[in-house]
Image (spheres, rainbow, N blue to C red):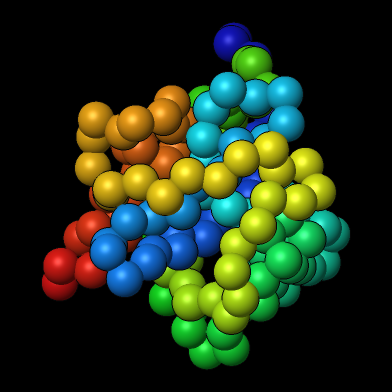
Length: 138
């Protein structure tokens, strides 16, 4: 029987600007861009995780009541070989101007369709961004 890779559970944000671009982040030591967000702590609600991670990583506040659940998606983890990541994704609004901090090395505002100008993780490129586009165009 094959061994199932351990699952990393995350919460991810889709933040867009007035031009319709979405914000992606690159962690230190990684070449691949992902959605802002992070791993849930034990007993932590998804939106509590998201608010905490946005504050820690980008220095912005999650606008209360703005989160719209886009779905839960799974793909191979780009930063942890042999593992899979399952992310709950939310379209959100923020207060403040995002700046890279904590483990974030770089930010990129990108048009929400391939080809992307930067390497993008499959969870974002194949699942989260298409779900956001479908929600936005609904």
